[in-house]
Length: 149
Image (cartoon, rainbow, N blue to C red):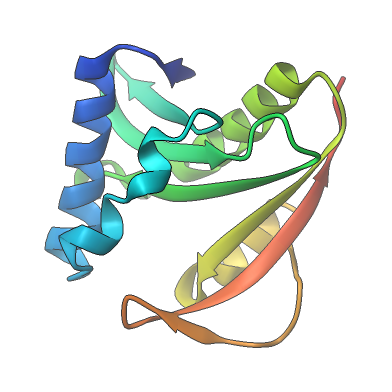
């Protein structure tokens, strides 16, 4: 299992396909909300999780270069869920963000309400108790301090 930064257009397109399968097809998020302008910003980093040499999970890191980064679009293909890969992906994204930034960071994310406990197990804390709708799905803001080792 490997978590790595995606630089090849083919890999980034495959990552978007995984996001579409998970968020658009499974969760009914409109395509125009899922694939957005943030995907092509200069300080956005796309990340893939490879299991048995196949990309099965993805995420993106926004605001690389800033003290406050944002993890998002974290998705594992349905047939690979329940194997602990989501945890590996998030921890790998955190590690890569610190390595790229070469400093301590604060990681922010907009968690789906149903994934709140998953992120709490990884050390994330609620920024507030406010729950809001994003693409018709309940979300809440969470954060975690990351240490650059």
